Amino acid sequence: MDNAQDTYPGFGKEAPIQSVQPGSGWGMRLELGWGRLRHRVLRTFFPKYVAEQAKQRQGTCANCPGKGLGCTGNVIDSRDLKYFKNVCGYTFPAENDRYAWRGKLPFARWGLVELIAFSLVCLVAGTVVGWLAWLGTPAWLVWLLSIAIGLFWLEIAWFFRNPPRTMPNDPSAIVSPADGTVVEISEVDAEGFPGNRAFRVGIFLSVFNVHINRAPLAGLVTQLRFYPGRFLNALKTLSARVNEQLWIDMKHDETGMPVRITQISGALAHRIVCDLKPGQHVNKGEMFGMIKLGSRTELYLPTDAKVELNVKVGDKVKGGSTILMRLTQTVTPSAASHG
Image (tube, rainbow, N blue to C red; front, side):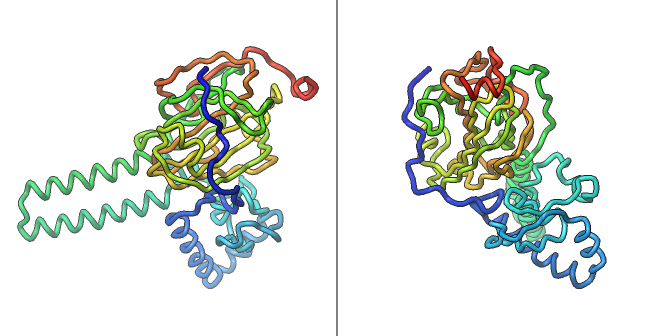
């Protein structure tokens, strides 16, 4: 293993998490604005629907941290929880959720607003190109512009895709938390691990990779931390120290060992999404968020973890299906806590 510089963020202080997308962004603001308009329409013209949803709504939201961003605490239906399910106390029974189908689309639900917005931009651009063709613009230029618009839209759709993944039938497997290329395997300083040292696998996600993040192991989320920062090229190791990032700390079900996944922004990716919250249990391979445009995802394990590495730097991996390493020794949580 190579030694690397410490991973403590070299920028500012930890910031509060008020939504699943703590860095906000134009897409989130656009959708929240649409949500406020939708609320007015529903309350004015569909009061019966609002009353029916109120009967199904469970929990309380008296001190919701997301209120300042648009979560008013007066949630009408499950659509209002898209950005605030990690901080809002309201829930709706899954069996009665008429919008659950959106999570089964071949595109990431967290990126639908950007996909729709860019599609509209491409439609307008295509209309302008058609108008130029009608005015007599040279055919070669019309074709060139049309192809450029088409390729741009295909890249956006490709970026936000959500393909099905097959989990390896191996209880000892630790799967990749992201699609991309392994760019680092090293031992580093890491707060919260035994001896403040950890084993790190860094994965770079280009704009052509799927950007959905998945849990590498089954476990309990113990802590989330969000650090605003810079937006360096995520290929650089330094990005792990200074770029905007979100830390997800977990406790592995079988061994009790600490596990950390870090979502790190890149030069183009300025928006991190994570819908987890402390105390929540996640299954191996379960989707929990994404990073919008090129970025980096890292996995940390204790340096004394009993694992067998299954990848090397330069390998291509797929989130939820590629085995990064295998556990070579299983320890019960009770044994781990007394070990």
